[in-house]
Length: 382
Image 1 (tube, rainbow, N blue to C red):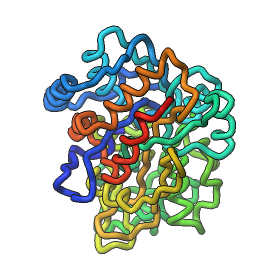
Image 2 (image 1 turned 180 degrees about the horizontal axis):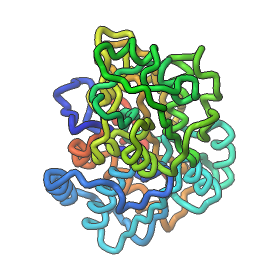
Image 3 (image 1 turned 180 degrees about the vertical axis):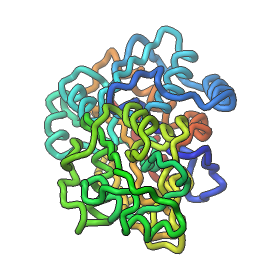
Image 4 (image 1 turned 120 degrees about the vertical axis):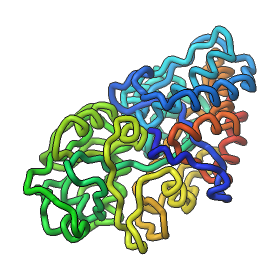
């Protein structure tokens, strides 16, 4: 989920935020750790510098993890650095989607899950069977924009609002020159061609976050269940994982889809600016996503740091279609053989150094207050 068009966020840009970009799991869908697009030598050198300060703290053996593709790039960087610093440690991640990662976690098959949405109440209850004496908790590590990517020859700066996005993905707007799109794009040469709308075929926290946004910002036009991780609407074409969805959009003229901004940036896919009611449409960048995430409220209690996002924000420059990716672990009842590695890896991921290596990888930071909460919780895992 690199989540930006090379507008790497700088801490000075938003004083209230600390550079955080980190996600420990990688991926919704069938992505492999090797599939995430590389950012280049700058990211590699900063990653190498950070690796030198990693505290291994008894880490050893293999740590199994599974989850969201939004975390793909972060996992690649963190695993590379952590394994280089901690000899004999292997972080083995399966990219099977947020839903699949939570299922594996609650079945005791992995020690760590990544999800683009917080655990549901029933999933927390299920986790208590695995987390003896405890439960699964949500630890937000990084956020960023969900880009609406498109391929439309001759149209480089497409603007849509929540209503038109909802109608496109709900098969209510089917032509690119529909009056609703034309009103938002005066002067654009919109073709009289069919829109090819793509969605995720696998269970995805990214899909769920898109649904939450549309249900909040365009409730009259998106009446589907905002809690589902499965695609709820009729019509459209499906692709597996964020990488599969981005590839489908890149290859098909007249297409549109949704995925973490890193996939759009790496594949040079044009992205939609959203008309939110602010004075100007807002582009999908890490800085703009951070402005929206800064308004998030903590709804979790105790060691759980689940967040409530304001998808209907009209704040100037705030990109509303955002997600926060959580690392999910047992607060108590972790297996003794994997606990040291789990804690050391998460300590690195949420540390200042762990977050800094991601600033060049198109991730948006957590607010400073949230990052501090997570840093305090990770050492208490038992």
